[in-house]
Length: 120
Image 1 (cartoon, helix red, strand yellow):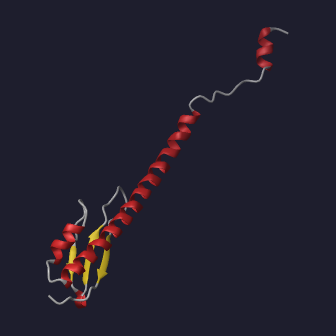
Image 2 (image 1 turned 180 degrees about the vertical axis):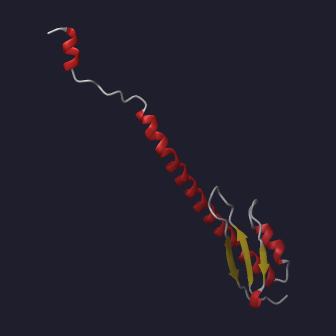
Image 3 (image 1 turned 120 degrees about the horizontal axis):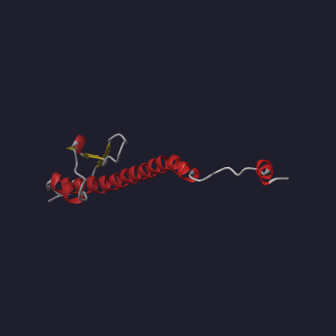
């Protein structure tokens, strides 16, 4: 058997170089989308927590006859601002926009609190 015939009969190896790079290109967008979704969920949670504290501080200020917007602004962390502060039926209600991350829609967190008025 000649060398030429032996090479023809030998099984040929497939060249798999670069296939892992192609697979990675398919996984990167999914990974990025998952990371961005997790960051958005964290932003919603942090905003809800900050809004809860801010509305309680605003209701406390209202019960003591102090400035509600000043108390709410002092309570909210940097980067968050109350879009609206209202006073329905003796309560304090605030709307805080959630920071928008990438492609997710923007929305607001609304919280309401009531504290009894204290005598001065």
